[in-house]
Amino acid sequence: MSPNDGDIVTSTYNVAMFNTNNLKKHQLSARGEKLLTSPPLPEYLQEHFARSAKPASTQEYIPMCIAENRLVWDLLQPKMADCRDVPHQALCYDAMIGSQRFREQLTRFMGRTFLGRQFEPEQVAVLAGAGSVLEILFHVLADPGEGVLVPTPSYAGFWEDLETRDELTIVPVHCSSSDGFRLTTEGLDRALEESCRPIRALLVTSPNNPLGTVYSPEEIDQILLWAENARIHVIFDEIYALSVFGQRDFSSCSSVRTSIGERVHIVWAFSKDFGASGLRCGLLVSENEAVVAAVDALAYWACCSGDTQFLLGEMIADDAWVDGYVREMKTRLASSYDLVTAHLGTGDIPFLRAEAGFFLVLDLRTYLAEQTWDAEYRLWRRLLEEVNVNLTPGSACHCGEPGFFRLCFASVDPERAVEGVDRITGVLRKL
Image (cartoon, rainbow, N blue to C red):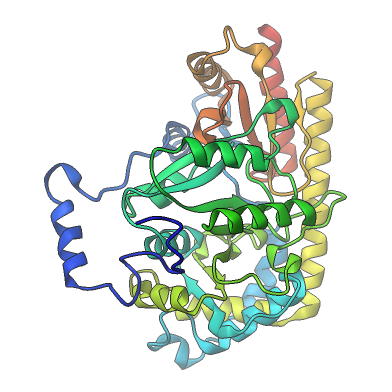
């Protein structure tokens, strides 16, 4: 199926064609050597869970590899406690893509905080986390074997989200450190032309993970224009939309155009901006009725609980609390970032400036024995084994150049983050 055939949903798995033949094909492909099991976790995550589960024999484990905001629990806990008067309806069956009431609360909240305009509740689908949204959305948009462009360095989890059960292939758009890993239309053109498989969509994280950068409205418009000319879908993962602490304001793709059209889709979740990755509540915003209907047809297997919807709906309905929370959350992110980067400067550790998210990228190329992935791996292991600090290696982010590491400064309290940087400095000075 060509990506230029003019259709909009463009998948044999859309709501109109999701039939028993497709189910049988999936069952057959799940037998023998094609079992639909999750791929192994990246090694840095395996180490994280193993070290988190047992007390350290020497130094305390410092996880700087997990993109969570652990700085805001004291802000969230009282509000969550106030929102626990759960009604009976929350225990009953409801729309699989979220109750009408919750979607109304969401559209109002998102419209006034980061989307830049109001959408209709019918243009929103709620599922159990952003990962579920991405997997089901791409199951709707693309067929097994087709490709999705992803600029790199990238969020590591996209590969599991799209390649495990959807059986798609991510085609990296490798950006260069020479210009700060800037995404360009030339790079997109090159990846599209060199791909050996049909490209169905482009997936962009805005603000960027792992770089922590914010796209300008002009840059977003360029991406939209490029995707229009390529006649492919473009998905903006805006999961860090409110976690911006730098000078540049966040601009949603929905604020750049009066209509995002039928080939543009937005993904957001409570996991990052509200420090609630464990509640599993993500959502899709789309003006494509067929896409939302197809997601609805598949939502049964990834519903968000009624209890969670009620809790989060009550939280975001309180405008004064939301505004105060977001202000303080940004202040704390900025403070932790400034503290960590000051210590990086003291240790003469080069890094790329960030302005959003919970992380920044260290440039440790000069500390590699040679410019290879094996040398990057050895440095990551050395930091882990000698000082019990876990970073996300650039290889896990599918970076095109070895020697870059993601450091999550909000995954621990500021004092532990500083201690982590000091431990890293001690190892690097030996090199």
